[in-house]
Length: 241
Image 1 (cartoon, rainbow, N blue to C red):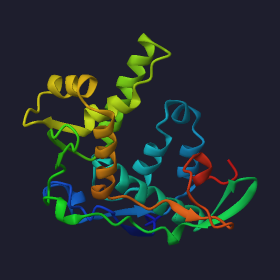
Image 2: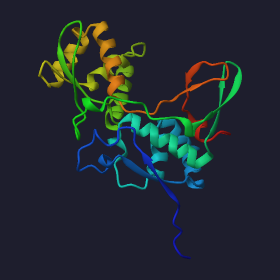
Image 3: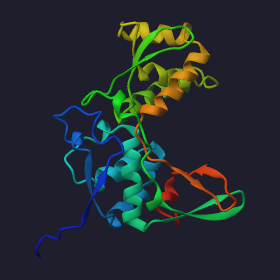
Image 4: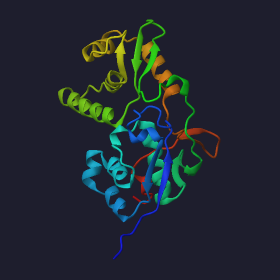
C-alpha cells in the first residue's frame, strides 16, 4: 500500500514570528498542520492525558507538521493553532451555552488581535516598561509553553505545602518579569514581586502586556449583543464529548 499523504494547511501566527530568534522555524510566522483523524480523537479521549492536563498539547504535537518545538510557542500563537485545528477537524461552527441559550460561533471569523509591532525588537521576546507609580524600570517577556509548564509545577509544589494558598498571579509575574532596574537575578525579581511590586503597578503592567501580546481575539457577540469570550475546553474539539 502506498503512503497516504494527509492534506495540510498553513496557520498564520498572530505574532508573525517576530518574537522568535531568527534560527527558530517559528520566526517564519507560520505553522503547517494536518487535518485531524481518528488518531487525534483517540488522543482527545485519552483519560491519562486529560487527568494530567496535557491533552491539548498531545493533540497539537500530533497535528503539527512543521519541525518546531511546541513549548517554544507563545500562548497567543498556540491559541491560533488550536482554533485552526478545531476548524479543520470539526468545521467552523461551534455551539456554546451562554445565559441558558445555545449560541453558534463562527470560528473562522475570529481575528488576530492588533498589537504594537513597534515595541518588538525582531527576534527578541523581551520588552521594556517603567512601572508608572514606583517609577521602576523593568523588562518582561511573553510567556511560552516552557514558562507555563514551570509555573504549573511551581504552583503544584506550593499547593502541597499549603493547600489553601494559591499565589498564581504573583508566581506568573515572577516568570513574566525578566529584570528589575537592570538586575536580572531570579532572586531579585522574586523579592521585588513579593515585597515591592505595588498592586497598582502590577495592574498597569498586565494592561500594558495586552498591547504587545499577540493573540487571537476570542471574543464574540452574543445574540443579545453582549461581548463574551469563546471558552476552550474538551468539547471545543469534540462537541459530543
